Length: 312
Image 1 (cartoon, rainbow, N blue to C red):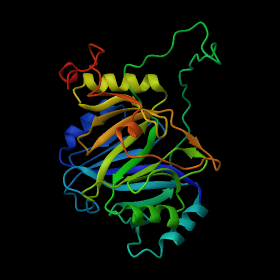
Image 2 (tube, rainbow, N blue to C red):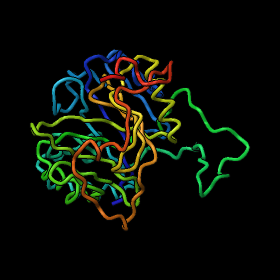
Image 3 (cartoon, rainbow, N blue to C red):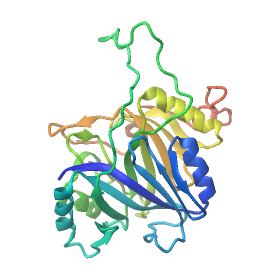
């Protein structure tokens, strides 16, 4: 199956105006907005749809408050869409959304599939002068960003009520591939091989409740992670943790509290996996989550750790 990644996510939100302000500050392009619905896009055309949470057109929520209500996954062409329709047709919750195959996954999340509408993006990342390639950037200073412009939605992360059942659906029914695991606690899945380390992460917490953990937005390079995080702080949004780096996936990150539900993440430089990648097992711990990280983030004006959090 030729999956291409996440095409669109839809949030049901309590405060639409606050969410519009957040996503403009986050660096997405506003396509449209009215009193009930707003649509934003990343550089490659991945869509973020914001609806008032009581909109009767939305699928039921997996948790209270603002949260994600629907995920659209992309496929390469009509043949792939037909194949997905056949795979899902046996599901009790099978239906169609906008003429495309859809169902409810075992965690209660509404998903559908469409032929990809994303497009290639002609952008340049900052080269790094490393020990083995000291002249990758010659006679010019490196890049500094005063804000971020996310390229795409790289992955979504959900708390799941039943990890085994939800993993089995995505692996055995849809053909997603396991990249790494927290045994009995979490599974990192990629929808395409070769491809980025994970496009979906399923995490089972002690209370077994379903919910949204975060949405991760891909940016060009580590400098844009910093630039975006500093700008989002200057705009008044609260960093949970970051900048930092994950031992699982190797990516650099910055997590921010989102009014659309849970967290939004800037990330870059994740592992790229082929058929040769061997899934690993990690103990679920702070050490597995972060090689290093700054709790509460960096003040966008002083460029130092937020003062109120230094001694906590």
